Amino acid sequence: MKHENNRSVTINEENYTTQTLSDRDVFSIHNSFNQTKSQLSQLALDIFFLLVTQIKIEDDELFLYETSLSEIQRKLGRRIKIESIKEAGQELLDTDFVFKIDDALIHTQLLSIFEYNGGTVYLKLNDNLIDIVINPRKAYTVASFKELVSLKSVYTKRIYLLLKQFAASKEFVMHLSHIYKILNLENKYERYSHFKSKILNPAIKSINEQTSLKISIYEHLKNRTVQRIKFDINSPLKQPKIPKYKKNSSLKNLIDWVNQDQPINAQEVSKYKESRSDFYSLMDWVHQEQFIDTEVA
Image (tube, rainbow, N blue to C red; front, side, top):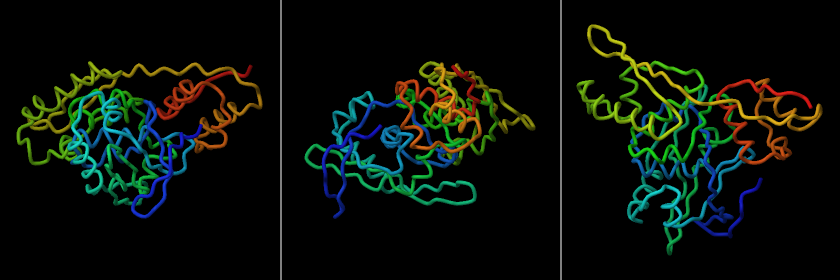
């Protein structure tokens, strides 16, 4: 599957062939993003994941996208002033992130290009993010862009990503101080009760009402003080229907690679002729670290 080419443009004295935005929903991102402290605004986070959602399994590079204010508004489901888009774009150009993958630290901004010219918006993810957003493997979180943008708080969005990361294990426990750090709230709430009423409870309520996840929380106390929070996750994830395959088919090879915990091969993916929605349903299952059970025709 190829990206639709639009036209050639020159930005910062470099030539690019622009791509148009698709309506894809499923995206994947390295777990390190979920654990990284972030000061991004809600709009900047939505624009970033709009671009991440464009990435396909077979991609081996990051593209320049050409779009418009009206299209961004349609994708995000709300009216936005162009001044707000410009501010969010500048955030993504300027904000430093540090990601840890294996033993390596990656220092980078999220965008390398943001330009607004005559009603056209140009956006490109930073090439330093290739290991964060391309070539998904077991250390990646799979989530829904539509669910993410339906959440109205940047804190709720970050908590949603954490919950999606651990959806397959059905639960996870995190120290309260680490949650504060991820949400950039280290010095804002001295009392847990304020954090719970202002941030945590509204986030859980929104996620339960607006996404496929159903969440319960349990507080772990020490000396009558909340130290950790346990999240119980009820995800309706079910194994997708995988069509029967012939013994030597490309789909069999793909499934065998997945079950052996091998990286996805782009050439093999390109041979898979099932519908796009079925394929991404399969990939969602793969990213949740499930073994694919099917049968030979």
